[in-house]
Length: 404
Ligand code: CTP
Image 1 (cartoon, helix red, strand yellow):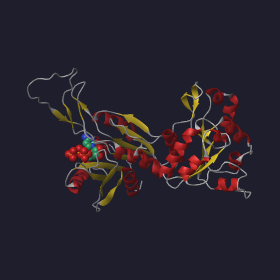
Image 2 (cartoon, protein in one colour; image 1 turned 135 degrees about the vertical axis):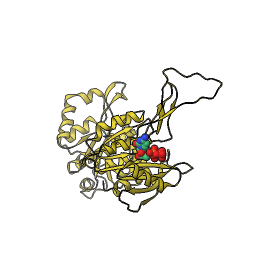
Image 3 (cartoon, helix red, strand yellow; image 1 turned 90 degrees about the vertical axis):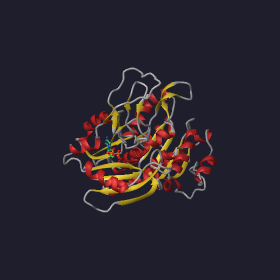
């Protein structure tokens, strides 16, 4: 598992009690990885297997991961109320994979095994990841049963379209584990009622010719961490991203741009309605004055190019702010004299706060999963120091410090 991805999703699942119910589909083999991933994300996991699931996976496999008993039988070691105890324990129940039979039983209230009995007694959030042959999924009976469960408040995750184990193509595949976790995280987060947060992230580019361009070392990871922190804090997240490849919250709206000028253009479309702006992008300060239409050829002589200043996205947006924008945060990437440079930037850009992080050297912020720095606020308050930690944890601390 990619450690950066893990650090972004851990806060959604840390200490969450997840009852993972596995039913009889070949996709049950994915549920082992799902169980392991949930554990790595900090969840407490208990597992229930149906009789049919036992045809595909064994309790021992899950017990090896969870270190706890895997439940399979309504009558084992019974003292009468095991199904009720199991139903009261979790913060959420995830049925993955969920077969057509299990979906039908739940829709009609059957209680003839541990899973169905326990779910009749369960009143919390229920997530269902169907997995079956595409014709079984599209059958009116299955569709009606799934609709019944949705109306009752259950949340369906998938199925995805693709090749199924039976050799047919269509909707019926259980989502891959990573994708399933990403959707689940989006559904268990707080409702997004605090308004829109606009986040710029990544580098920008300026083209010299169709082959070469100028850019910088920004990975976009700090901006991505801010996007996740704001998603968790209850904001609708809108990202304007320069060219980079970072995970972003499942429900965020993402616009991809290349140049500083495009970034400003796209930000303007969202900024008016946004209550928060986080300018985490490492925007190029210069662009090629002229871009060639054809590839420039090598010559045995030195080459001079003219760079013109590019637009300052943060400065321009800050000038256009109204009462709607409650908080505007800029980032400063500095190799030296961090606090002095950051104080100048705070003054020059006019935003509410600047987070300054050291770049360059072995422990610089570029492309790292960890970061550190200082938060400077307008109004002459002393700067706040943030010790080195994951960018995900740091973003949460910044969001808290700004009262977002
Ligand atoms: N920024 C911007 N547009 C630019 C340059 C910077 O929006 N053309 C924003 C960045 O997103 C960041 C803040 O301004 O929030 C500071 O960026 P930084 O690159 O550290 O500072 P510069 O203003 O570019 O100054 P310098 O490169 O001289 O340090």
